[in-house]
Image 1 (cartoon, rainbow, N blue to C red):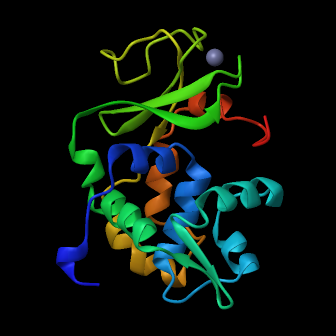
Image 2 (image 1 turned 135 degrees about the vertical axis):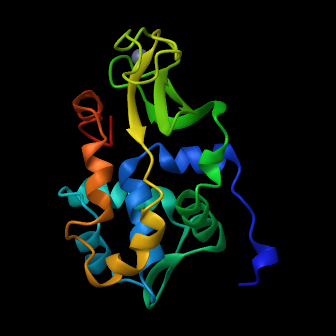
Length: 196
Ligand SMILES: [Zn+2]
């Protein structure tokens, strides 16, 4: 791919993907692979236990971000741009990004969720109910109303971790920082089932 063909994904496009850790993990696993991956191999490389949930998120990515061929799953151009932009920090250079609607419902009330980006975090907000109704930890200037939780973005180190992950996809490494930075509260608000 010629460098001039690379485009940064729009915030809408990137955030809809970033809004799910599972979807982002799938894209990163495919980005780290040097060939198409079979379903079982991909499932093995993504840190999710529930195959139904995995299948749901993979399905949301297929066609636009992920292509499926006889050889397996691989990133499309759009998927590769998301991975490259996230890993390079291009998406995250903007200090504040306006809220973007996701295709996920609030698990309190079922209303659509919106996400915005501030200070290295994707903040999730409900469009209808008060949510957790508190200011996101570490982001005191963000609104409390509707706050549901946040997702930390991968650290810059992930860019260099791509090669390491190729041989050591599930071991300790750059992803350790990723999970250490996640507040316990974010874990508690994750939807339990993708079908809700
Ligand atoms: Zn709600």
